[in-house]
Length: 292
Image 1 (cartoon, rainbow, N blue to C red):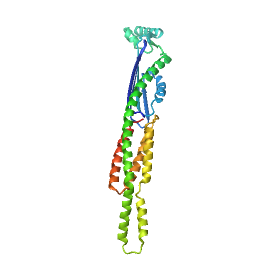
Image 2 (image 1 turned 30 degrees about the vertical axis):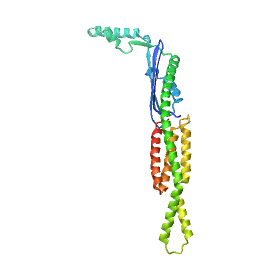
Image 3 (image 1 turned 90 degrees about the vertical axis):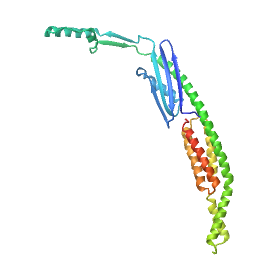
Image 4 (image 1 turned 135 degrees about the vertical axis):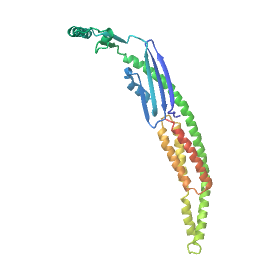
């Protein structure tokens, strides 16, 4: 069955060099709105992570957080830029001697001078880190997908149950419709006879015109289309391809047919049943908003 757009997955993986945590959150969205957040120094991971994620997720607002904690402390080395520092110190001594002022340069003052320090940061092993992050991301996606599948099964079961209720009500409308049309034809013929009274219009002509009017309240075509839509709904729900948006359009068509039946029917039991059908359609629509 289809999956829910709402889910959560998390994985923590570590080795002797680093610990990687991947968290995935998602909520409903009309399209795929994907955000991947990593520490700035590891931003090279984002494109690769997005390609992996889009293989699993088709729709929803998805936030992915990748945290990387290094266990080694030697990744950054800081040293004096000796030529620059010597130049600053000599210049300060010359200024003190030339202008008769105190030479008061301290080590902390030296370290604050522009370009006084050389910062040597080891470049991360991108291939190694990418492989470890992708492994953790895959595990997080598996956990995330399991949650979505479980929720999706619950939603789909409810949708199919309500679609079954609608199908039963459509059966009632179909059984009731011929009696309703005949009752409408009879009332029209009686009314036309009362209005025309003593005119020379033949009774057969009156009956023919009444039958034409009565045919306009027939809902046979709408019932056929409604049943076709319900069958399509069942097939899409039981499929594995993300169909949330298509289902949304399909439910609109189901609702349109129900509205037409309600507007054409002049029979109270049918119009009451249509109200019940529309109530179930609305519940299905709400559930579909959560499907991928």
